[in-house]
Amino acid sequence: MSNEPYRRPRADADEIIKAARRRARAASSRRRSLVGEAGGSPVVDGALAVRTEAAPVEAPPAPERRAEPVPAERARPASRPVAAPVELPRPAFVGGVLALVVAGIVGLLLLNTVINEDAYHLQDLRHQATDLTQTEQGLKSELNDLKSPNNLEAAAIQYGMVKPDKVIHLNLSDGTTVEIPWSGE
Image (cartoon, rainbow, N blue to C red; front, side, top):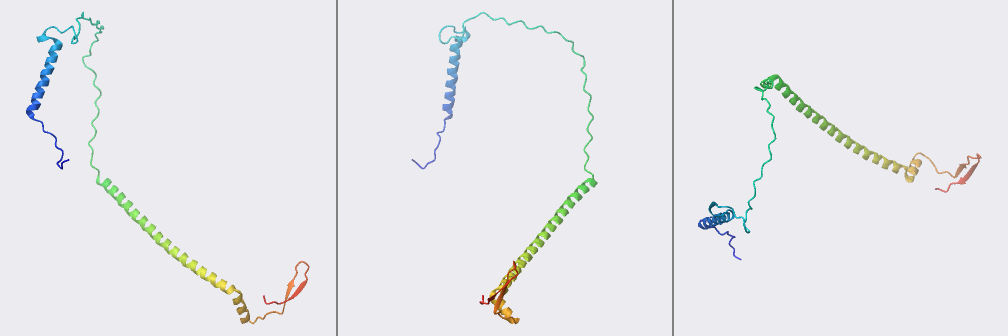
């Protein structure tokens, strides 16, 4: 293969004209052979026969038409009134439309401001809720520390409480009491 791009062969103008003349002569000779030489009678025998001679066919009679009188003048349709010319909008209407557009834009700006203000307020409330949750967790942790047995014992000693020698249990069903020595648990 060569690196040259594909080129179409160019046609010669003289060759094109010669080919067109040959086709025209061939068509003319075919036409003459079908019709006959020099305007003679058509060929009726052989493969090139056009048609055998036949008797002419008569056309059917045309139907009768009634002659209707044509009116001298047809009635013309009623004329339509001409539409009034279009007037330019009045300044009051244009001013009203502009005021309506400006009021709409100002209303949208105010609505957007209120929505943003509420968003900031919501964000502040969320931060406050987070702070309160952390405070609650710290207080619960401190309460759990104070409820531990070691801290309870230290607080009891601080207030002057002492460990008992005996523990008395009350039986609620019959009202009897049972004394048990203190085991330290």
